[in-house]
Image (cartoon, rainbow, N blue to C red; front, side, top):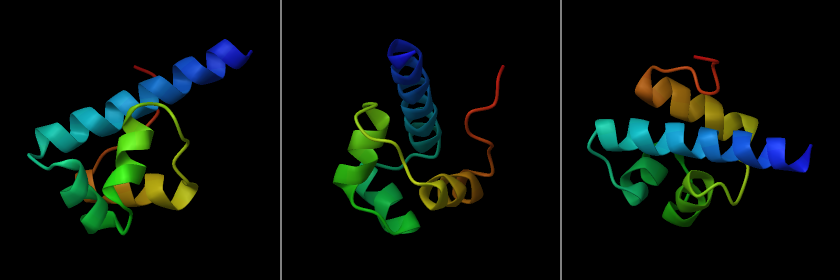
Amino acid sequence: MEKEKECELKKLGKEIKLARIANDLDQKELGDKIGYSAAAVSHWEAGKRIPSYFAIKKIEETFKIKLGEKK
């Protein structure tokens, strides 16, 4: 079960990173837009930390996407 959570966390991080890059933003710029630090964005993208519900919603609103959807 722990491996499954880790895999999902890495997928979420990859989605955030791809959306950020597609919108030509660096980690600091994304952090500034959504009210978080560049370090927080880095940790999310690397799958080291789970973004809060509010952070996820801000990212989704910023990029007009839905994170974590099964494809």
